[in-house]
Image (cartoon, rainbow, N blue to C red; front, top):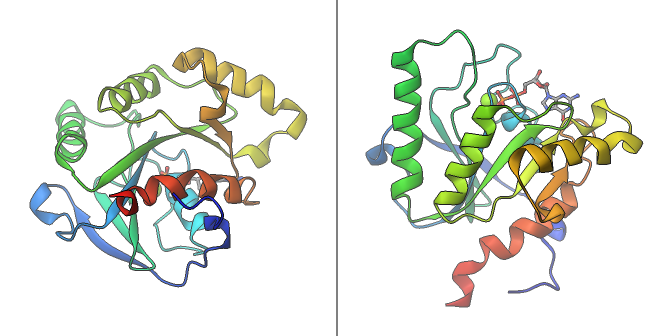
Length: 208
Ligand SMILES: Nc1nc2c(ncn2[C@@H]2O[C@H](COP(=O)(O)OP(=O)(O)O)[C@@H](O)[C@H]2O)c(=O)[nH]1
Ligand SMILES: [Mg+2]
């Protein structure tokens, strides 16, 4: 691992939507590494990806929840991918649609060799839902480390972050406080810190 060269120094020179998929044969077929982001509809996943890669609107964002029913693969610097997973928790969906969601996401989590980490995105203002907890436990059951981005941190005062982080730690039963990172796509709060965390994960291949 190359700790000296932080990814916050790394320039994102290129980013493209490489693939939109609902099943494995639609995933990119090369072996570039991937980091995926899971969370409730409307929590801010697409905004998170856009803010990390300095794009206003590459990952589609919307104020209408429940829109993204696909796995979207964003190719960054032709080096790695950020993967926007379909959101959950939108009230107005049928049982059939929920099953479809489970199928799409499980197909990805259980079979994707390129996948190095899955990060849960929650809203720092709200206690995580039971579905967040299920998603989080599901992520950990696949062997991922359980990183959580608590986004929309611009919407509460800095002095209140800790109180809200504590609620998240408790609901998700997290002991290691360093796993939960306050973030804002609006002000890019902690963007450099997130890149620092992602860098060694993305460089795992170099160790071999
Ligand atoms: N103030 C603020 N608004 C945000 C932030 N992240 C997302 N939003 C807003 O939340 C809404 C949903 O965001 P989106 O990225 O589409 O959520 P997704 O469904 O999880 O992809 C949009 O109106 C965004 O502008 C943030 O960090 N701060
Ligand atoms: Mg989205």
